[in-house]
Image (tube, rainbow, N blue to C red; front, side):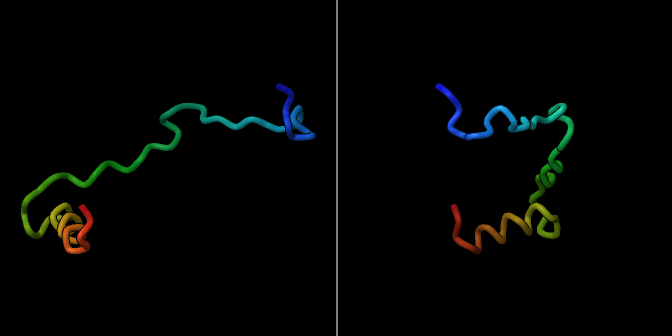
Length: 51
């Protein structure tokens, strides 16, 4: 099939150089301590009623 864009042959492609280019932040470490960041985040979701 021909390209439907009139300037199809001029469109520049874009790709990542590698998967390491944009690394996500690591997840919050699991903890059942009520003062931990994980517990606070989990409690916030629980209180919102999202399952």
